[in-house]
Image 1 (cartoon, rainbow, N blue to C red):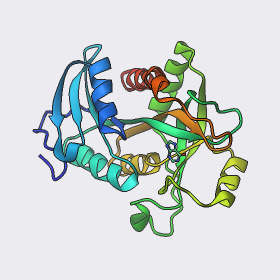
Image 2: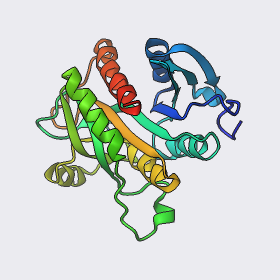
Image 3: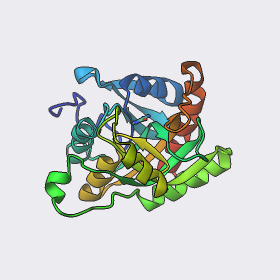
Length: 234
Ligand code: HPA
């Protein structure tokens, strides 16, 4: 048990998928894992461990935003020995060629500030994905025929942003999408020498205002979960 995770030592697998939403963790565990057992429910941040094609996997909610993810990712790596952490979640599309339901595999995650900013201080650290996971995820996405984009994303501290000038610079510099967790996950993985990746589904679009209807989310999110699992065990 750690401060925020009630799982017993050994209850957490070396490979952990991290959706922001604890109910998406439940859905993904029930849909994709065999013998999924609830291993954490502290603060309702559900975590499940089961097997996928014979491999042990934990799917643990991270909550929304980098401070919340930082708590879970730190405890998973430092206390439970998690080696491979793959964020699965939604993001807002930022380029005209990025469509709703497309998958984004985040090579890098830019940020203005993160919980690690206090440690990094003046260093403009470039949080990047683990190369082996990135390559395997791209292969898995291509094999499935999922429309996929690979490149830089932006991890924001605010969902309700009020900086159109900043969005403009990000679009200009090729940022594919915006979410709220990956930069800190990549930074923590670098610090702990673990593997991390973010595989995201575009749920809304900042320029067009389009959004994925609730009833269509499941199928598109399923592609992302399977890409994440295939990458983790490639
Ligand atoms: N902003 C931040 N995070 C998000 C968004 C967004 O527009 N869409 C999905 N996650």
